Image (tube, rainbow, N blue to C red):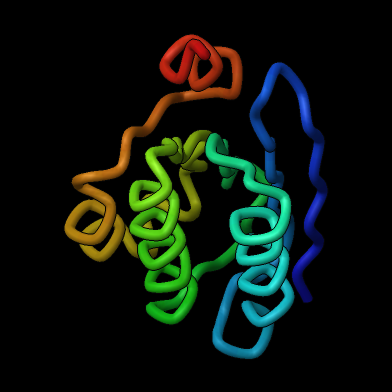
Length: 116
């Protein structure tokens, strides 16, 4: 199960994920992000993984693809809140996949990174 909590503030969409981001649960997140990019024209995203229990390769790929979509629209995407559990389970995959994506320890730092 994946819970998606979103908040739009200061020109950025903050997305807080709770639960499991996997092949089975990623469809809703993909559709939500695609809609926000394509229909709403949102360019700045902060994805908070602090409450995420698990992410598989499909979830990682989903975030990578949205990162490329955002940058094509001259926006930015920042990942924050890598919790210890996520780092431990998929550290190699995350580091390799997300090396081009900006990251921060929390949403406040992400807010300062984007600084629109």
